Image 1: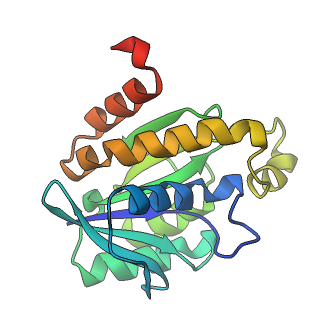
Image 2: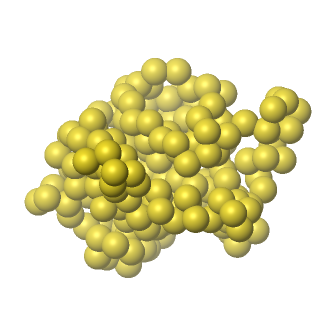
Length: 192
């Protein structure tokens, strides 16, 4: 079984924020991959489905970003999952807007949602890091992540979310590099 977690903050006030790009990714997968309707479970919204014959749970923690680990841990314990069975989609300041990286484990780069999950489960979960860019100074970070994507940014956001949803079955197969390659090829078809 695979747990796909999107990090963000609940409520309409936060829906378009850069910090909610993890929610956006999971919502796009939900829409494109015919998952069951969301229901409130594990202190968040959860939806069941399958990818390539693998049972998958989508989860959007409603504990707010800084307490995401509570929700993720409840789901992981209920289904007796290991950290390697968890893929977390999240915003990344240290990547240019529209860029992404897939990795397992590693540092937390000051991301409070990742810190919370790591405090509960360790750092060996898988991550899909979605670049939102850095505002330039650490004092501007909070305002940057809690600001909505601009109209100009919406194009790459939608394209990247769609490409990730299309490639998500490769995550269920454990093929993180295949996922990254497929997303890149969808976004840049001239590379084929």
